[in-house]
Length: 388
Image (cartoon, rainbow, N blue to C red; front, side):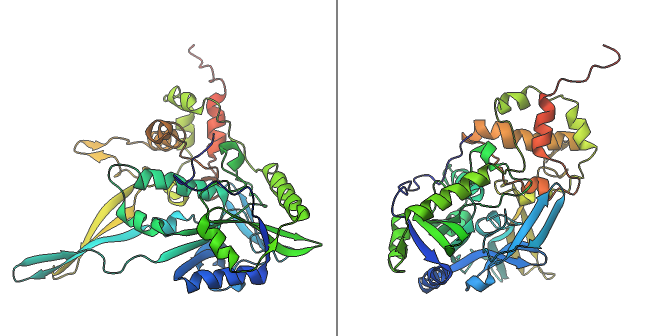
């Protein structure tokens, strides 16, 4: 089930591959910062690999890997100095391009009323370093959902407009990854400016770099990289092939839309509801979920007021509340709504699946609920009741 990359993204990246070393990666970071970009990439904080502003390769998670399974996330020391030797970061790039809380406007009281104004500071120019292919496809989905419809999300569009994306092929899939099932990885295929494949072998620690845009090629030209040889190309291809064969999970997408639509009353929904805490973790870590709400806050005197857009979740009772109460009053109906939208009605709504196979919803579910397991259960014959 192929996902779309960013609309109009260059796909001319079959040639022109070069090789850079770790100092070359530092030079790339320096060049981006010199052009006014805020470089965001993975780093280790509080026992997890998270996203933060970087100025040096020394801040990358060198020598760190991760162990991910249902309701389990642990870091471990690798036996090498890989900078990207982990699966997926704890939080996705949604937290950067579509932040959990965003000021829409503020207003001040005067003698004649209120004066409203938009946020004063323009968003930074972001350079995203280390974007996995699954997350690259998630950004492409948000490009469509948040900018290509009649009413664009202006905040997202402003942050996304000039973002420079450096993708990194995944050589270490986690126990909850299933990007191969969704056709979204592990090799970046579109929507990037540069794509890196990290190689560590007897020939040293280096990166095969493939440009995906003209500005990517331009930036590379200033680094004096070495042309990629046949051995480098073969090593990168072997790494990606081995990664694709080591997915931790599999999701059968054949007829998934019809499967979910045809099982709205399946007893599995009650089964999963008995385990689900409706904590909203799955929607918060999902790189494509985009539901929001609006909050207004004021000071105690009522002289200053702000309106914020905040993340919301279809797992809360308030999310579907209308005048007569919540449309989805049970946990079973909320989980069914989330999973059916993600894997079925998203296709009708946007022409693509809403899942990229990153596995975060499995890793960060405290009840160890597994979307691939729940989908597989719907394919099993229903149990025969004693009354039948």
